[in-house]
Amino acid sequence: MEIRELKFPELEQVLALYEEYERQISAWPSKQEQQNIFEQLLKSGGCVLVAVVDFAVVGSCTLNICPNFSWSGRPYAIIENVIVTQTHRNQGIGKALLGHAANLAEGKGCYKVALMTGSKEPSTLKFYESAGFKGNKQGFQRRFNA
Image 1 (cartoon, one colour):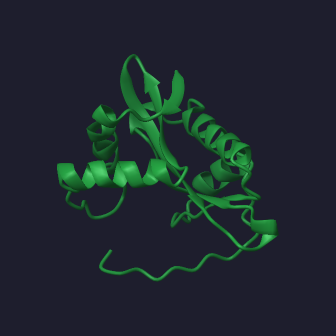
Image 2 (cartoon, rainbow, N blue to C red):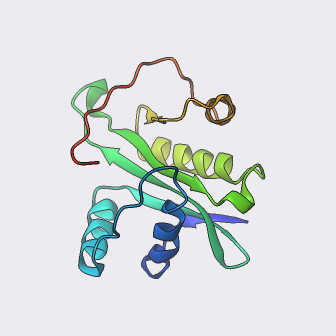
Image 3 (cartoon, one colour):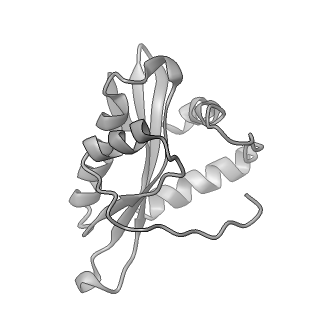
């Protein structure tokens, strides 16, 4: 298994992974939107990480780097879109992705890296804790047409 940053031509493999989420499937962004989003993500210091096994993308997460005024101006990072294909779960791939993302965030000077999950499944919560994340804060969100 290899954990590395996504190469743009692999993006469709990541978008296909998102269809495994337990939610309503949404349309993919247009090719131009995909390119714009990818460029914006990289420009901000973030990236999409992929786990590759036998030349196939089997897992992914997105690392967003956010500018910040507190903590002496140190940025913080948000991890989103964590997914490992069902056939490759429970093999350490998700934990490796999260570990790599956390190391990148720390290397970029972030004072923290955070993620949220909508899952109430004890196994999912235990997974995030085993990857070094603490469920010691309450998260809130406001969604817009999603």
